[in-house]
Image: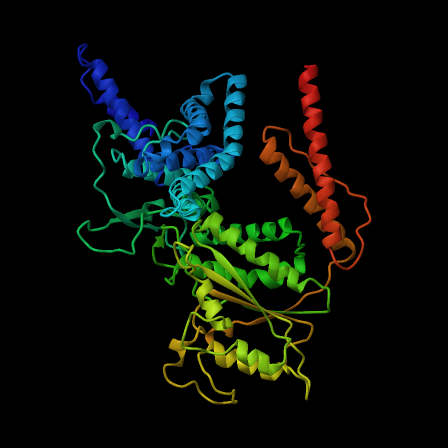
Length: 594
């Protein structure tokens, strides 16, 4: 940007009469170039701007301002309600002031910058109350035609389209001059890049309908060669009828994808060592985020469990980012997650070892990891089915029926992938718990239950027979080939080899991995207590006092107990609350003394 700026300025005529206009034109060109670089995640200060956008409350305030503008464009009369104006007008004025002055925080005194940061955090904290009041009041004013969930979905859509600073800049550039669109206006950010789109004063809407963005990295088998890297953006035909295509939203991990190979090669192209695929580092981040999500839910993943679960998660995440393409093909930069690798696990171990807790906490951990790195709009739903029931009852519950509006388990699993409240199809995690033992004469029996699952999930209604092939077109009636369904079995017993063979006949369970889960004890329990307490304290301080010094707990001497970890988790959360209050109060006292 700096070299381009010098070239632009030096190329103008330095006549005294035109010097001022030429400098203004050069500044506008440079500002527009910086804004476009921010749109594709290549601004020199992109990392710092993304961090400021996400962590300082800018994102939440900016999205709510866009939502308010959207409501004024579609419901101007309802927005004049006195109850709304009394709350929204003061908040909106302060928000516009905070965001408009935020870009100059780097050149402001430290005290003024801290005041603006405190104001943004205060506005961010109060945005939930303002949004709740807005949705409830508008729904009450026009109750027959408007519902609160409709407004919530509209706000979620705006939040998805502005999930990162790059996407917010892209939305602002694409919607320049469109006064009725939800992506216009709104002051955000950092460095003034969102306010200098290089064309907003003309009042003309951009005529671009962007469809897809692809990134061609340096060849994986060679050393890092930047000359091979390309970003290709495809434009949609405005006259073509494509009702299912939405707006272009880039990957939240865009910067990580673009800089992964240069970081691995040390930023140079002279090295002779080969570097991996750009998505490898993203997958590593997603797996680490999954472990953090499990820990946040109070579940400890020791080294043994990470080694057993990690490979399956890696293949699942990689297939979702690859979108079914070969590793040598250009990478799709649109926000997406379309897995082709079916993730299937069989967790077994003694009672109370934490199998059900792992399944229950793995669901939100996978959802958070995908939202953070791949697609914030995609949801992971949860369906639980208990298998420890009389066999006739299981047959009735898993029955295939022609009507999808019934309450059979098969219909529920397929319906949860795309509910009425979702804007796009998502994933479904199916927890098949309490698999019985393979014991002759037992009801239910493991072999019978496995055969029933194999038949129903593959779309067949008959009885399971060994060696029998699936009838023609049965796959179209079943869900066996759907990789968006994550299946996890839990049991106190091992899976018998014939039962494993019966499950692996269908594609959904072809990658079924049996993992033994042991209860957390001794040193692992102490390590879990220390890491969980540290995480809770750091998160609470980051939300309420991000400018405070980091607090590290280096030793924890408490009785950790045995068996179930839930009482220990409750005790650690209580300790984290008191530690947070102690740190905040000590900092306030020091400030008063100073």
